Structures are given as C-alpha cells and as structure tokens.
Length: 133
Image 1 (tube, rainbow, N blue to C red):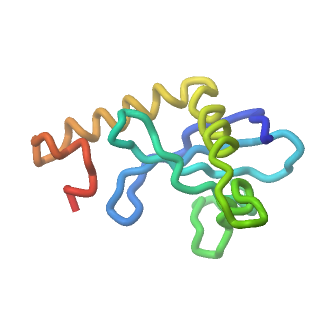
Image 2 (spheres, rainbow, N blue to C red; image 1 turned 60 degrees about the vertical axis):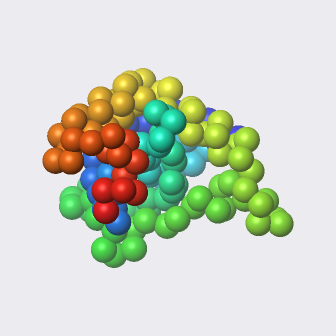
Image 3 (cartoon, rainbow, N blue to C red; image 1 turned 180 degrees about the horizontal axis):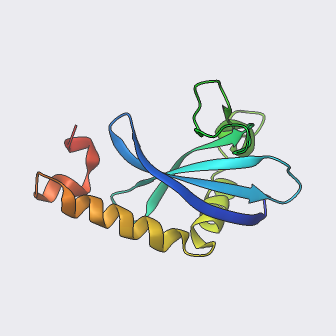
C-alpha cells in the first residue's frame, strides 16, 4: 500500500475535451513523483482516471510537459494483479488518501463547481461532461 507524504494540485486543464486536475503526489519509499489525474464524476465526487510517474524534475523541465515522454502511465502497474484484474480496494484507498491530503478535495470541489457555473450551456446536462462535447 502506498503512503502519501505530500500532495498538491499543480494545474487544472483539459484532456480530450474533459476538464481535469493534475495532483502531484510524493509517496513513501519512492524518489519519483506521481501525477494523479482527477475528473468530476456524476455522483459529486471525483474519478482518478490515471496515475503517471513523473521522471523529470521541475528544475530540469521548466515547462512541465510530456512532449519528451517524461510521464509514464503507472495506473496498471500500481493497481492490477498478475491476472490483469484491477485491485479496486487499493486504487480507491490511494484515491481517498490523495483527496483527503490537506485541501485537495476542497480545491477540486471549488474548481469544478466554478467550471460548471461558467459553462455557456447553463443546462442540467452540465453535470455530465460527456454531453458537452
């Protein structure tokens, strides 16, 4: 089980036309940084869609981008067993650790609520981003 030492929201962005938040996570017994990607979900919580390992430090990569393959998708390696079945308990436990660290959940709630209110559509389907695109 991964134990979180530090977590912070580093950016709000869009990927494939879906609003998301990038949260950098430092865990015990690891030198690298993990990048957990969260999106808003229909049940007023958050989905953790991916977890990447960030191989390049901020001092080297001033632009913090993945053009040079600095991010490696670790979602399967961290949360799947040998039979390629997702270990949902471990995945959900990690997600909750990230969301409850400091003010992460509050920051995500505030951002995604503002995004909903700022929507040009002003309809009930704003809650479900799949209808927007």
